[in-house]
Length: 398
Image (cartoon, rainbow, N blue to C red; front, top):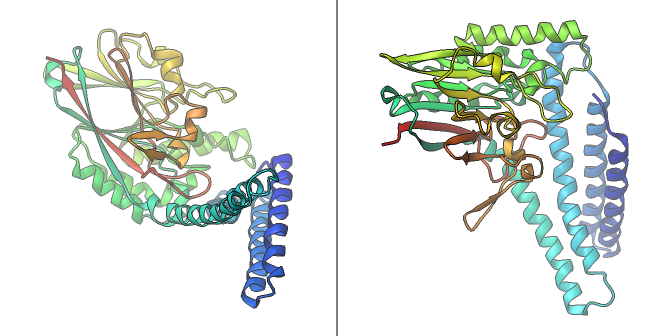
């Protein structure tokens, strides 16, 4: 796995600088418990940092070993973040409290506030790793279209995305609860918008039986996301990566899912029909572009389309302005697994890269819904954003 050395070295130096300040102050108190804390502080930093370094610097010799290795690496990275981020925030406040021209009482307040912010941050991050990722939120969205065929008024689509099954290291209990939640919504169709796995098809093997339990009147439709192409498995040759993708596609087929890869299918109600269109992943720069909306929609002129595309980048880049692309369903962003909610407003660092990062977006009658995902990529935490199942109900505009 590739390591970006310069940021890694900068982080190491910053962490040790903060630890030197913290530990020296604790040690100077002369109290036994404070000196024990100073030692534990250094041990926690060195231990988590060394674990991350070793895990990132090693590569399993086979795909079967990679799932456990990936899950362990993610947890080690989370532990390191739990040690690092509260200290960084404390360091910011402590640094502000050292500015000479500030009043002494204000300096004291800043330093005390830094301690409180650090403790609160640690608690929020801990809850975001042990509780939030295993609760599911069902979001209900009603969409009105004048072009929707009358027979599809009230059509129910369950939209899910970004399962990243490898994050659970073979534990199927959470995904089983997701399946039960999906089925309880009595959908007409279930649409999965990519990233079933994080690195390799091996992650999905324990889950195929559960995948086959997802039921909908008109079936389950899926596409591939950027993680589903085995592109992050640098140990594999191009031929092995291609075989891995075929294996993942075969698992979805065995589960009864209809995989749409720059292709489409018609859903009929009497003489009326709509098309479910799936395009391969459309990467934003510098990632590769596989999706081709023109190929996927051949022969569908005048048909109402529900378009599945993993990356919401494609919506504004390709689809906005096309009258025959009324609804696009995407995922990919995860809202970076962090959302700040206050006074009815939502913000995520994902907005720095993706203008459409979570929820519903509209341009005239064209709409995009970005599902923020079921699973996790990277450190296993979610803060301010629960795993999401979206129930979209289509209505014919009167």
